[in-house]
Amino acid sequence: QVQLVESGGGSVQPGGSLRLSCSASESIFSLAAMGWYRQAPGKDRDLVAVIVGGQLKYADSVKGRFAISRDNAANTIYLQMNDLKPEDTAAYYCNARKYIGRTLNENWGQGTQVTVSP
Image 1: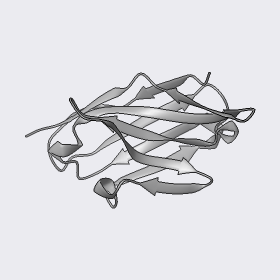
Image 2: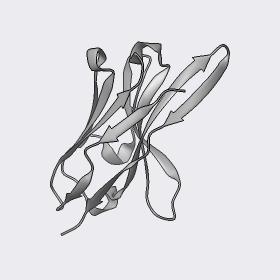
Image 3: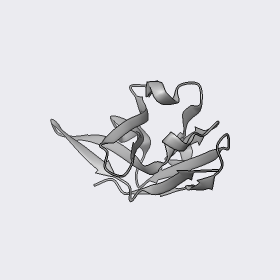
């Protein structure tokens, strides 16, 4: 199991910015992918941004506003969120995928709440 600890959520006004952090309990080089998902009340958990195979991928709804990055030495990824909109309000979860043999295991953080309102 990969332990993931998130931080950085909060409440902001529309147009504001937040930066989320997720620290892993082991080297992120050992992971197949690491990224962020979000879940609003009553909705599915959806991909926001992910680093996989060295590539950065984003949901269409956040392209140009959000940026995912990583600090390999700190085993940490970040999600810089700019120009936040009320529809970005959700619980944000860090996700790490790791192969154990041929099995791809998923690991989740505890979630951090992001609320965007006037």
